[in-house]
Image 1 (cartoon, rainbow, N blue to C red):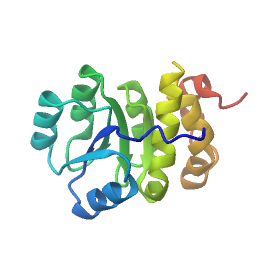
Image 2: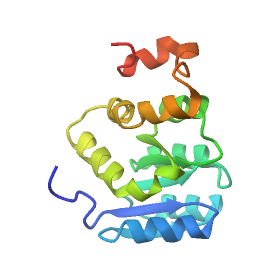
Image 3: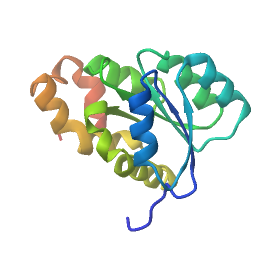
Image 4: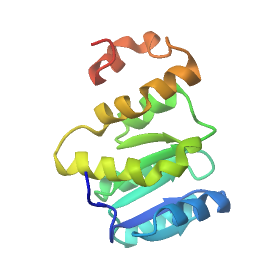
Length: 162
């Protein structure tokens, strides 16, 4: 990819844990990062200001409601989670329009993932095919190799079982 697509991007980060916000801010040094630690604070910011991307915690700040607001404002929403890490939440994130679903334990690589998302979005492609490549084996390790089998019709659309 070469260039950093995050340069000068405006990113809203939303989490109720200050250490996660601190880490995200440190990991995105070339972006203009705006922090929110509650649903209401994030909702107000999304409704009043421009953002290129938003990184949303699922638990603690009602991430799915914020996802809906972000989509309506044409802000690229990315879900970040530790407690809602499940195949069901991955599917729900996709179905509700998130660009990606990132486990918090992979936080140190967030700039790589966000760059990939911006690259794929610029090319007009699905960010979820790229998610499968990036996190498919992680999910296999976390939930066992058959985690997607109970929802095979859904997950087969993204390159599993090819």
